[in-house]
Length: 214
Image (cartoon, rainbow, N blue to C red):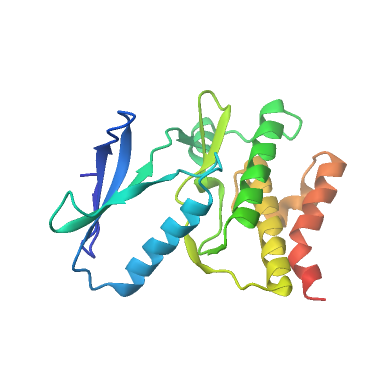
């Protein structure tokens, strides 16, 4: 068992019979009284199913309601790697904006944010930070883990523009965090010695939410 939750859910390591690779298995009792937690879990499944074709989020693989008489089992892909936040902290370094590695990670994260913004109909329950960014295979694969999804988005243009602006701001904060290894890094932008064009882009992204309110 990987983790036992106080509400009765369990997270275990299982094996996919088709590919013979390890997968995450969440076991939820068939008699489950925690409605909010169950709703949150199904929101997570719904968002992950919509992002099935995105390489940046661990895939939902399906469920089994017959293999265990007491629990339903839900299976998710395991993406291996290390958290970028942990790497930067351990190395006591930050990325430089002119480094190819930074540019590659920033591009991949932009694609990841694009997928979450336009391919998922669910809101984010928590902000995506550097703790959610993982890399593997010497840094050439970038993905997001432990992203928490909430309720579904409202289906109107004004709300969609609001979501876009929130995601742009979150992306800019994440990029700045990569360059500073500090949370709430937007406060540091004016003092950062980085490429002027990049600084302008980050500044506009940070102000995107403010502009939608005008």
